[in-house]
Length: 357
Ligand code: NAD
Ligand code: IPM
Ligand code: MN
Image 1 (cartoon, rainbow, N blue to C red):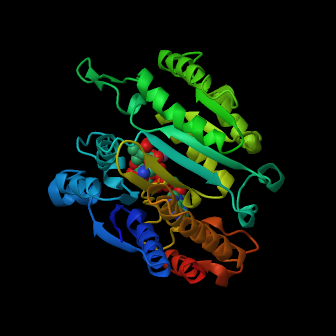
Image 2: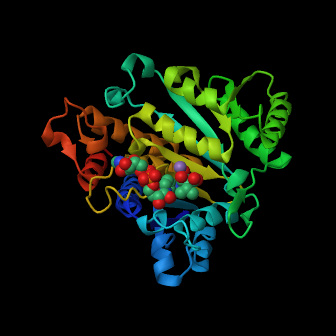
Image 3: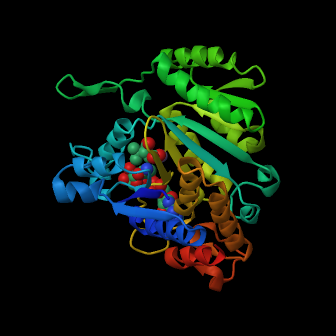
């Protein structure tokens, strides 16, 4: 029987706090279903800089490459956010990891639990029935283009750049997913201005021909950002670049009620990596109040996508649903009607989910 190796990569800030709960869920699933999961922890981000001077030590990368899946938290530290002159930064570790592992497709499902209709600042009648799957390209774009300074440092530039193969491979993933859903893809770009977006659109149109059953719609990023709040139900599969996808999915988190609810899967050439879309959240770090559900739902994506364990993944999602149905909330998803006794912290929320598993 197979032993599955999972690298746990807590990172910084609330990454540490929420990943602990995600890991417990994986342990519980292993026990319930009779699987053998072997865990190994690795460092990244600020913690790794402090220990080794490198935000992504070789040892961490080697562990990840040798594992069957990775559960990641977040990186980031106020020290760096407040110091634009720092040369070594936690986020560099994250970007290098994505590149080295070939994780070019970032799937960000916007799953709205009915129980959280009131948690959002958007009207329930606008939200009800929303179900979106973002395909955010993750190893290209302005994140990885040539960058630098000139004019004695007084001019700075970052290059937005895409190559045909990069657009093709993520487009295929989005269209394939669309075939299993509503057969609709919305591609989001800024092709009225940007050359890289014009290539993006051209390639997406070509790929679309191979999926004649799928209806392709194009939107510009500015209009898409507006439409997402106006009528989220009009979205199904969204295909977009690295930067636009980063921004649109933080916006979309408000459809699900909170940043603390959104999980993601990063897949590509090698091992799959699973992480909440949120960051290290310095404003709540150490308070024990972070919502662990994004990490727990990332664990469910790990089971489903990397291990093909559908029933196990569904068990986790159902447990989250039951926890919410029973009225339990973390602070970020509580509303005026939530009794104080039902507002749980990171650990007690995690424990509730474990009970329902
Ligand atoms: P953030 O996502 O960390 O936080 C944004 C807001 O959402 C904060 O008010 C935070 O308290 C809240 N929030 C986030 N996750 C939550 C959770 N699980 N439960 C409850 N509330 C939650 O974004 P930020 O504040 O802009 O960035 C903080 C640091 O995180 C920065 O250093 C940034 O670079 C880093 N970051 C890292 C990642 C990553 O590692 N993937 C992602 C985004 C930001
Ligand atoms: C994310 C984050 C990262 C990104 C940062 C921290 C580099 O915002 O994972 O969404 O922009 O990709
Ligand atoms: Mn982001």
